[in-house]
Amino acid sequence: MNEKQIVQRRIKLKDQAISLIRSERNQLKHRLSLLRLRDNLLKTMGPDFDPVLSQKIDCVDFLLRE
Image (tube, rainbow, N blue to C red; front, side, top):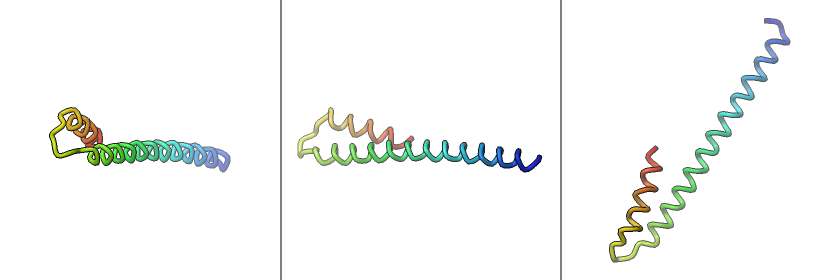
């Protein structure tokens, strides 16, 4: 490979890295949103059992496990 090809290859690799970092950043932002949602749902729990609220919390917990 000559210098031009090496530079082109490095640019391509950097572009791929940027794409992966953006993807990971988006996944982290979604996880943070789910954590905030779970915290808000847990705050709304009262002394009485609410089956709908419990199902919502279970759903969010399931999504957080992935």
